[in-house]
Image (cartoon, rainbow, N blue to C red):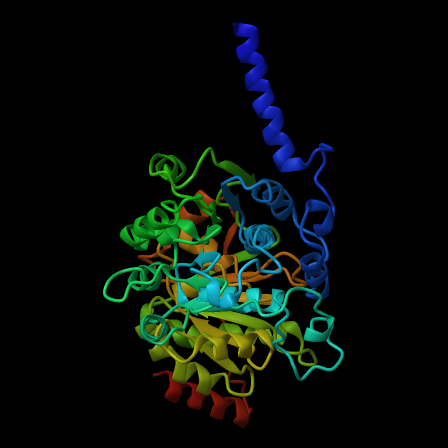
Length: 463
C-alpha cells in the first residue's frame, strides 16, 4: 500500500514538472515550441517579443494544458504576456460561432485600475493585428504583416461611460475579449439590465490580483462565482508581483480553481536588479522645489547632447498630482515635455501614448499607475511622497529596470525627517541598498544673469 501511495505521489510530481518544463524536461526556447499558435508566435516576433522569458515559458506550459495557475514574478519580468499569450491561444481561432451568435465574451481580463486596463486592451489589440503607429512606414508591427484571424474584437469596461454603453447600447455585442475593472464588470453583471459577461468565458485572468481583491473583494467574488457556475469551468489565472497569503486556498474553497499550479520565478517581493536607490530629507513645503533641482541635475549628468531621459514622478494622491502639475510644467519647460496620468483625468490613452511614443519625456502619475504599467526605457523614478508600504515602493520602483530596458534606472524618494524611519524599514524589508544624498544647491551662479532670472522664475512658479 505504501509503495502504491509513493508511486502516485511521485507520478504527480513528475506530471507537474512536465507542465512547467515540457516533456523534454527543459524550458523551451520560443513561442511556437511552447504550443502557441503559429499566427500568434509570428505576431509576437513582429512586435519585438522574439523569445519568451522564464516566467512566460513556465506559465505557458501550465495554462496551455488548461490548468489553473497562480503566477508570481518580480516586476518587469514579463508577467503580462505570461498569462495573456497562452490564454489567448486557448480561444477558438477562427471562431466556431458567428460574432452575432456569441453568448458573451470568451476571455475576460480583470485589472485593478483604468490605466492598467487601457494598456492591456491596447496590447491585445496589437496582438490581434491592430497598428498603433500608422505613421511609421515599414513598421514590422503593421497590420499587413499580421497572419492571424480577422474580426476578433477587444473592448474595455473601465469607466461608467462604458458601463452605460454596455447596458443600453450593445457595446459588448459580438466582442470576444473584455478587459475591465472589478467594479465596472460587476456593475454590468448586475441588475438592472444585467448582461451575461462571465457566463460564456473560456478563460479569466486577474492581473495584479492582490490589488483587485483588496479593493474590490465583493465584486471579485461575484465575477469569479458567475464565471465558474457555467457548464464548463473556465481556466483561471491569478497574476502579480505580490500575492496575498491564503488567496490560493480561498480560490479552491470557493470553487474558482481546481488544483492550481503555482508558477513562481525569482524571490518574492524582489526589486528589479540593477536599480540604484537614493533619498533626500526635505521639509514638506520644499519637496517640489528640491525635486525640480534634482531633475535638472540628473539631466546635466546625462549629457547636454543626449535626448532627455524618460522619467516618472509619483505624487501621493490625485489632488497632489493636480497641484504639482502646473508648477512642474512651468519650471521644467524646455527640459521635459510632461504627460499627466490621473484616475479621473484626461483620456488615459492619450497620456500613455504621449509617453510611450516619446512625445513626452516626463509622466506625472498617482500610485494607481505604479501597478503593472509597462513603459519602456524609464531611467528615473521620483517619489514626491512616501509610498504607502513596501509593496507600494516595489511597484513604483518596478517602472524602471524592466526586462529588455537599455537603461538600469535610479529611484529617488523625497522624505521628511518624520517619514525617514518608514522608508528605511521598507529598504530593509525589500533588501535593497538605500543611499542618502544631499539636496542639490540652487542654480544661481555668480555674475550669471540668466541663471539668477531662472531661479527667480522657479521660486515664483513653485511657491
